[in-house]
Structure formats: structure tokens, C-alpha cells
Length: 323
Image 1 (cartoon, rainbow, N blue to C red):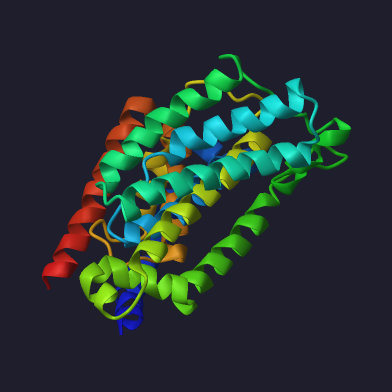
Image 2: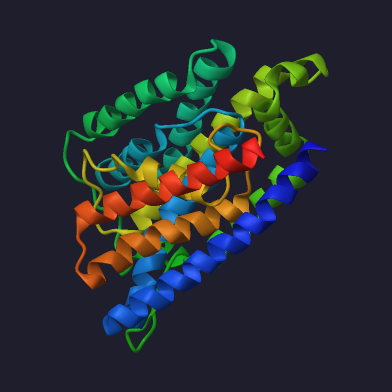
């Protein structure tokens, strides 16, 4: 019953977000002819890969009624550690990628223990791990930036997962195929597996779910492990997209991912969520980040508009719950 209710509320929301995306594209294209170019599309997709991966993962803690604030600084920290192992310790790129993902899972387990087992407030627990991950990567790599192997080197083939350059110099953003496949897989997990059903049930009524015989601590913890896993994958995507990873960056990335999920229909109070909606919400956030400079609005205005969009999304959720 919980799953059907969630679907009923979110289908209209996803259509609405699609309409917002279409309206934004038309508006930016009308106000700035430069926006209607192929490089702009590539730029939007480049920005969306790592944010989408974070959003796919953090959707699970959000649906339980929690949050994971460690994913933004975490992805940079994991990318720094993986890059340090590759560049300075000489490990193969595959090992560096596994280290990046493994660190994400490890922090996810840690968050899960703090929230699900020790019953700490999710905001406070993940804020602490956010501070830990912010310092962990720079501490292990000596405080210096790290550049993963370039696309031109033999070991830089991993970058072609997200985009490659043809012989005539055209950049092909094939990463969107990888992202769409993951969106479909995680949508299936959320809507058609025990993990997804229990995640929604915990967010709807944790005590009733426990009384129904569900191992609430395990599935609650699993939600944070999934978030950590996708933060690790986001670290790989970030390293594959950008030439150099700098210590101290990553603050605010988690807000883009969480904001995208909420815009896409994930309830801030838990119990309701959609993977496809979260993906569409991230596209809205990325369109604003890339499109607003084309019409002369710089970083400060981007943050203001993002905040206003999030307020609108939360208000819509509140009104629906009251009805």
C-alpha cells in the first residue's frame, strides 16, 4: 500500500519537473543564443554526472526521514585518496577506483552505525562525518591537489566512460547512458525489491515497521551504505570529468544532490521518493548552474535561485501532505 501511495503522488510531480526543465531550456535559449550550442549540452551533462550519482544514493536516507551531509566533501576526499594511490603509490587505476568506492562504502557503514544502531540524529551524525571527510583526503595526500591519469595516457581509459573525443575533435558525452542505466536499476531497487519497500516503510512509520517484524536497524543502516556507495561512484565520476581534484573543494555538492532529490519529489520528512524524480530534479539544478551565467547572473544569484526553488519544492510537499 505504501508503494502505491508513493507512486500516485510522484507521477504528477515528475511530469511537472519535466515541464520545468523544458521551460528552462526554452527560456535560456531565448535569452542567450550561445546557450543553444552543443558545448553547453556537454557542460550541463558534465555537471550532472557526479551530482546525479550522489542524488541516487542520498534518496534512500532521505526516504527514511534522514539525510547524509557527508557525500559532498566525501566524494572529493575519496577521489583524492584514489588519485594519490595511483599517482604517488603506483597502484593500477582499477585499484584506485576500487579504493574510491570502498572508502565511500566505509563511510556509509560508519554513518549507518551512528544513525541506525546508535540512534544519533542523522543531521548531526552526518555533519560530523562531513567534517571528517573534509579533512581525511587532504591529510592523506599531503594537502596537495591530485590529477588522475589523462584521457591521452594508457591508464586514462576510465575517463571514456563519461565522455570521449572523436578523431575530428567532437566530444561525445556517453556518460549519460551509464547514468540512465543506473537510474533505471535503482528505480527498480526502490520500487520492486524488499530493500526499497522497507526503506519507504521506515520513513512512513518506523515503529510500525519494527512491530511488523522488519529488521529496521539493518535496512536503515543499508540506506546509508547505499548513499556511501554512490558517493564513492560520484568520486570516480568527478575524477573522470575534471583534470585535477583540489583539497577543500566539495562543500555544497551535497546540497545540489539533496536539493535535486527534493525538487524531484523526495519528501523532506520521509516516506515518499522517486529515483527518476531525483534524476530530473538534478537536471533542474544543473540547468540553473550552467544556464544562469548565460543570462548574466553569476554565482551569488545561482545560490539564491536554487534556494527559492527548494523552498517551492518543500512547500509543495507540505501542501500535499496536509491534503
